[in-house]
Length: 227
Image 1 (cartoon, rainbow, N blue to C red):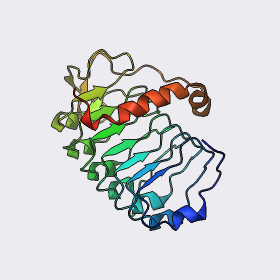
Image 2 (image 1 turned 90 degrees about the vertical axis):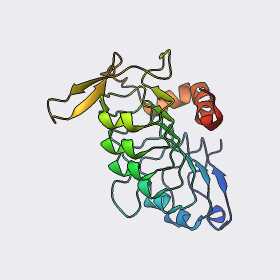
Image 3 (image 1 turned 60 degrees about the vertical axis):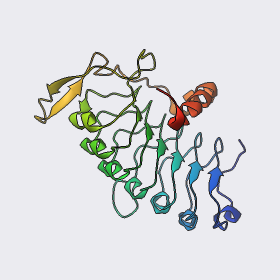
């Protein structure tokens, strides 16, 4: 909660740093030198102005928790060698309230993911590779533009799947259907397709609704939540 526009160089020199919280600043980009923080386990960049995720994030081998909520991201790095999929120890990944239209298929390589939260984006579909995340227990994709879910979601051991803020139960009953455009079998329910997404500026929403962010931060800490 300062006015940082750049990450101070002194932080990058702290090679033993394990936790770094830079929430609610004015950061637009990350320095490539962040890749030197090889012991970093938790990185909180929520509520900034980041519109492009630097490849250096994929070079943090110890990272377990990554918060990127309330930024201006339109995509995640889709190509090797520095994708999200390189974060093999990642257990909690939050990209709520950005402008993402798709999630790279490489997300399926994050086999340790326990919580994946992508609410309030512009997602039209989810990659089939989500089915590789056998340890995923909480998936939040409410507030997007999803028409259906990939059939591979049935491979997961989910305890909570959120499609709507007003959803009464953490899990829903799904039916199989076919996507006529691709010929693939998909999953649907009474909450799909999702309603049209609001067009209000993400930045404006974040500034006006910090209380929502704080509330959802508690939700993100749900590894011990008894569902």
